[in-house]
Length: 295
Length: 271
Image (cartoon, rainbow over the protein chains, first blue to last red):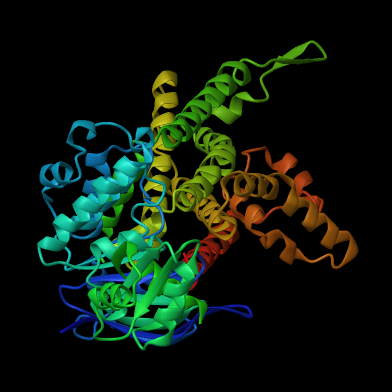
């Protein structure tokens, strides 16, 4: 069942098209990554979906065709930066969120435990580190038990430890079966967390699908030998790899579908070339992303 | 939409704010202090003419002029402190991006706008209550208790609400705190007067110029001067002001207009 359906969404700022007829669909339970370089339109898309920006064209529907405040109360969202009253503490800020969401008596203790902020609950928000602010924003998103979480660059500005902590919390929430829409330009983050991904550039959707369908199953093989020239000629003469590139004294092979790395080793050995290096790699999202966005 | 819930939300947002409390303290403190100074100096002020001593300002402190004088002093606090607070209440939401966040959390844009207007009404009522407390306090000290004229009290509340709404609107249009407050203060201090004089001398000598917002709101609390002085003031087109009844009607129209523009802007704008 689609949780979100976006149809030909457009947003223009004068002559600049921040979104250009973008369509996509997010199903229930997916951890959906919105991937794109800075300025690709990810935040604009989320801001429109959360109704803080008006679209120039197109439409979207949440859940079973709804929009408006009742729908937004079923969504927890962190857009760009955490936004709270700086002089209020965590308890007061979360109570305010609960009032806005019409959810009396929210489980504030549980939420603060989840984001590891219980010991700083009485400190003013302005005294928090960026990581703590992000974690409080995540707790605010969870007030009222939303069906969907929207997280825009949730690890932005965090140190490596903070990034790991934030990812762990998100994965914990995803494990509860909640739908999560996560926008990021950090490929590693999306690859580690998301089940599905959409790649956006200049407001246009370039690719979308399950992470497995975006990432090629075919491995990339890196080989090396003393006689690298001979090896290159040999591999170029057989239909084993669809692309061979050289990196210093190594060859990078993108194998044809159905071919396996052992065949490279066997072929070289049969022709008297002994490999001194063979590493099989799965194609990374980074490679795929760069390929797609460079088209 | 539940106005009481919106009021509760605004209270929880702003009451803990140090800046908000400074504004409230400044309003109450300066209002009370100016009234105290006026009473202590004005009541005993003596003029001697041809050997005869007189107390020309003493009448200002007698019932019912005491309430008009208090409203006149309060009108400065309404214009400067309460109006600036109106600006701050909005720009603070934009500088912290909390208005946008409230919409993301599920508040409708109309609710976001109405919550500000409900809060402005509550603040105007509180200012009116403080006006009554000061007025009765002065009367108790004088041992001469009299009920305030209802129209005077209503006009004071209307004036407080008018300045708050004007501040809200300027804050919403500019969004940046320092520039908004300076623009607001410049408007009530001299911009409107300068425009009025410019139009009067360069464009048209029309009475319509008395219906500009600050003129209207200021006319809700005229200084209780003797009739002869009042006549002199109204004989000059530049110092003339509206009657209280005219000002009350115009202020109601302005408050409605400011509120409508405020709501429309929040509903239509990208937050």
